[in-house]
Image (cartoon, rainbow, N blue to C red; front, side, top):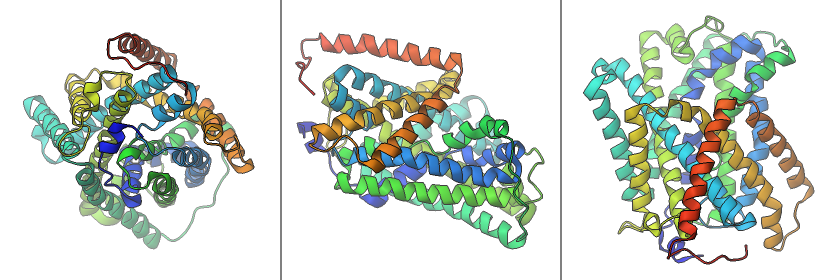
Length: 428
């Protein structure tokens, strides 16, 4: 390990990593997906969610295998750098970083919009801007003063976001125990919404990016990944099952879970789900800020960008990287120019998944292991096929934005490479 990674405080255990992953997965998407999926595939929708979880298990399994090979922060950037060298690793880290920064800004904007439903003054003008500044500022400070504090907040947010969702699914199933017959949809209908179902499970990299601040990450990160997928898969399936077997399904509601809660629990239920949306998006934002702000610290540790980003604060956290990430997200959120970029954030992460899985056999060989076991080879094949297929469902505009990010990253990489403080090339 390097000097930087030794200076970080390892405060986070398996449960803390679960909080990071669960909050990274459950954002705002699940609150809109039930009606979209039901309209497309009817009562098959909950089984489509379950199928999505089973397919994404191959990706989670590959990341669990990758996590057993290093205890350093960086996630996909670290894996690709160690396997293929500095330039590919930098590009992957760069894509992840800006994709997460823009997504974080988008989440905060969504959060403020939902909050405006309770307090309309937050919806426009100076009050909206102040709310964005306060939210991003508080999340940034939480991360600077210690990852343990940020994860503690995530723990509370996880309970507040999961409890109402589980309660809602249970209430609906008790009140409406009859189950509609499952009708198999046309394949074209499944194909049309499969990508949306898969996107709901993207976020497994959260566990690996902050490995340098995790207790015994080689053991705790793989375990946390599999636990998180099981939790999220069951919650998604239960909610979709309850929704698709309710009278609300197919009504075209833009807020399906709020409509579901309102139907069975009146205004109080709808209000509770509205508050859950706010808590959910806030938890997603805290998790995103916590893990993504560590990417530049990892890039600095490898001397791919100025070492200023790797500065360790008196709280033993990469404070400069955390603050820089917060300021970037704040700029995007206040200007509103991030909307098109947010659409490309998932594509950037899929490309990072593909590169990380591609690095797995090389890293295993470097660790003195065989390139693949039978089970790992099967999982990697499914994961790669799934990610490549999903990536090519994206539009030309999204690929153009990704190319622009890569071009900007290439310029910065070579500036850092030929600076007086650049690290010498080493064999990987």
